[in-house]
Image 1 (cartoon, rainbow, N blue to C red):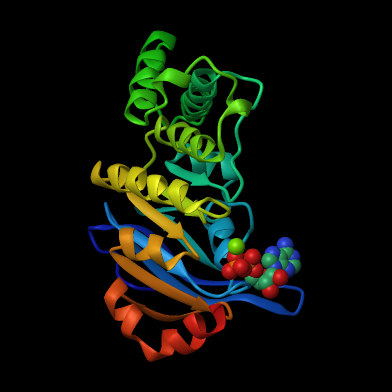
Image 2 (image 1 turned 45 degrees about the vertical axis):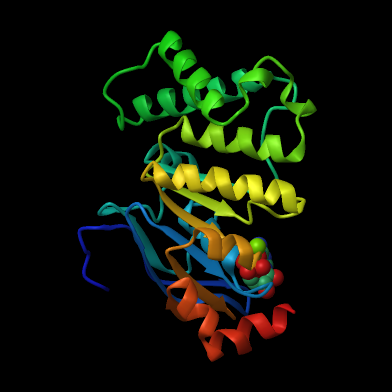
Length: 256
Ligand code: ADP
Ligand code: MG
């Protein structure tokens, strides 16, 4: 196992995942640096979503461990991992369509507050008033202040994604995991999402992003890991990955 370094916040160590005879992940080692944006790219079926599912506890690895800030996440339940500061945005927005925009954000904050308190990850309970103030602040920062009282179901796809990010960030996570956050979006919504993620990144949060769209990857990532056939085949800066013939062959060639 690699030696833990001070600025590594999440460490995936020697993770394997098999589904029957299929090796979805083999020998996966990843070190995610604090306050950096780390992209995971690779062709369809490479194992990207499986890797994210293993990190957030939705799938148990066949072998290996995931460690957050020195604490082993492997074996914990998804909600416990979430309470410990791992937030995830799925490919399809997960919001309560019949609740107002602000209620969605507040429900998310209550879930984190009460769960973390129960699991003893938090010492005190934040009041409803304090949560409301934080919800208003975050929705204002996200440009959704004029939509706070609207039903979340009436929002555009881009705004739903925005709301979902607000729901994650009100939980003040240590690390934000995104699985193709711009999938199915128009170029305009994609660009707005990139700008929003740049703002989020500037707050110092650690981001792991799975992304197919190279424009998104090259706009945001500090580091890129390339997954193909369940293995990390290359790792480096976006420019290094762009220039790599291994990556071109394994990924860019297939993707085009
Ligand atoms: P990606 O997100 O990179 O497109 P996935 O992680 O979704 O890839 O899938 C990796 C491989 O594992 C694929 O061959 C896929 O069919 C398989 N797979 C994913 N989830 C399951 C599952 N729950 N059961 C069986 N096979 C799965
Ligand atoms: Mg996927």
